[in-house]
Amino acid sequence: MIKNTDLETFYNRIDGRIQLIGSYLNNSDKLPKIIKSCRLKPYSIFSDHFQNKVVFEPHWVDEFGNSLKIKNKSFNIILNDTEINKNTKISSDLFFGNSIEVIAKNSKCVLVINFECNQRCYLVSFYGNDGYLRCFFYYKVIAQISPVLLGINTLVDFFENIHNIIKENINKNKMDLLIKLDVLDCIVCWDPVGWQDHIKGDCK
Image (cartoon, rainbow, N blue to C red; front, side, top):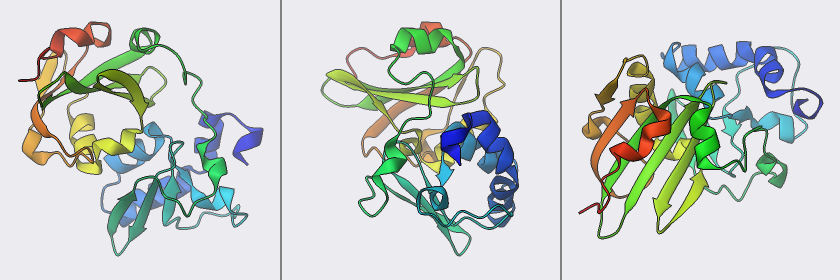
């Protein structure tokens, strides 16, 4: 299904499924936005079990090989899920492969997380003008990573602070990052091009 349409049209077609997940987990406001912004897709479209009617989708996947599984009104993120179809890794992001500078210029705001470590280490997540998240992790080199590594609670808090005019500190105690490092601070601001101004250079 997704092979024959653009991503926005695809999400419009499955909006009923996305809203159903939000209602099931009692978060009809933020969770649908998280599913779309992370470009999560129902796994059924890759396994020949996709149905045209609105059904509950318990398994969602991203373009980095990760799964989000929903059961008993809770969710579980499985990183590098070896049991899913490799076709899930085909990127549907029009900005995939662009430099971090280009992505910053085409974004609404940025989330910057500084970590406690002995070398420069931080995570930068851009919320694009198109409504999609693009995340980068810096440890010696910059690498693009999956937005789901931020964790669902972190993403909920991010979207709660996304409309602040200048910048807002996010409570690090509410975060559920899947990157197991100690967080120094976390900032959301409306200056994605100036994201480097919020980085603590030495991370000491």
